[in-house]
Length: 591
Image 1: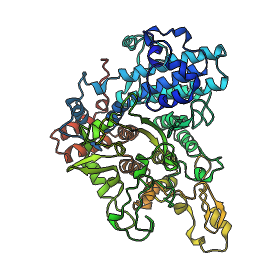
Image 2 (image 1 turned 45 degrees about the horizontal axis):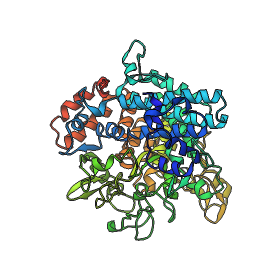
Image 3 (image 1 turned 60 degrees about the vertical axis):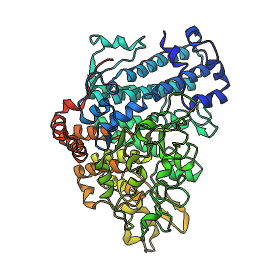
Image 4 (image 1 turned 30 degrees about the vertical axis):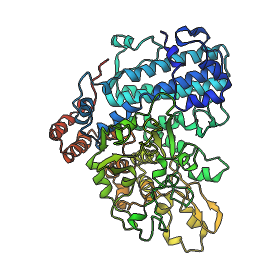
């Protein structure tokens, strides 16, 4: 059966529900001949058909959510298995994966890659035949190519060396011939992917800007952030390759996504990691008045709001302002469509949950050891990332919207990229490019609090004071955080930036790290464990830094501590194994 027969009929949660309602041209795609009678020669005739192909690709991609999170979190240091976990999950946890482990199967990734290749080939044909506009072609082609790069980067991170193919093969089995498709190591793969992205005909933060047939809002959902962000992806590739200036340029482009928006709420808040202002904010907040930055709070006043503050990021719909200020890429699940949300089964211990995974003690201890500036001796992001249910620690980020009394209604989201991760990765690049003070600012207290000259605060020389709130660097390291409360004309785009730790009121690390490149880099990775725990970033972060330093202990020690604190008898064996870089990678075995 031709691959596109499968693609065009894959259902994508929410997207297809939305598209079927709003895209008149899609009706024929989803209501034509049965799959076994599809005439493939009529599959690519106009932009509606191209849209259906894009939707199909993303539907297929969403099936990878479970495998993606498991490989990137269970193998790392923040997520542990429970007694309910199956033997294959336990293998991931102890880095003892066997060839028959379904979670280590590369085939699902390559199935989507070959789907991408087929779509890209047919988009080229459509372009040559003028079956859609040049603009429509460029946006759709670039979107699918970027998604393919994401898949290949994941394969490189997990397997080390993988076959790289851009041909529209008829079957994944064709790749078994290594003489035709030799494996590339991660460095060579990065070169290929960077070259691929540099030849894209279209690059923007939004794959499909407002007005595109694939960017719509209806029935409480918006599609714009469901598609991959090209600048972020290119930033990731450059960061992995060690091209730090180029990485910073691309990450900064993501931060500037709404720079020209005349709506100042969007311009000031989108991807800027700002302090909570009473209306907008995604940091830890309290209900007893004041701010995170001054005065004492009662621990019992911690806000669990589902519309404002840290928890709300994992509760709001993708049409809410606070959600859009933080999330760069996330894909919702709709209980009426496949694929179904896999995270309920993995994390919940009520309803349809099987409680197979739990927060590791290392994660819990990390939150407990980071005090807030308001006098509370722990990082409250922990309380908002997991909770105790029926006496068991439960990861909540994926299941806040799940009601165990309605167990089959498994809505939720697959979270991929957000503003805090963007700032941490940008800071990682800036730090390696000699901008340690800027990296420190983005990690800790924000631009203005770090760079403003306090000696000029009460001066009559307002111009000099304002000038000190602009970072003293060229782009992509220039940030304008100017602010005077009495004059709204002096409000730079980053005047509300609070830093990742500062946004949630956590005490800043010592300023000596501004000139300690390696030490600050480690602190950035540590911060990822506090802010981004369980979101699918961790293994990649550990591997990237350990590779850069040629220091296996950076990764091995963290995994060892997880297993040790959770009482796993294999802890020492795993540490010794991970001291060999080759053992970081999964066995590449076709199922």
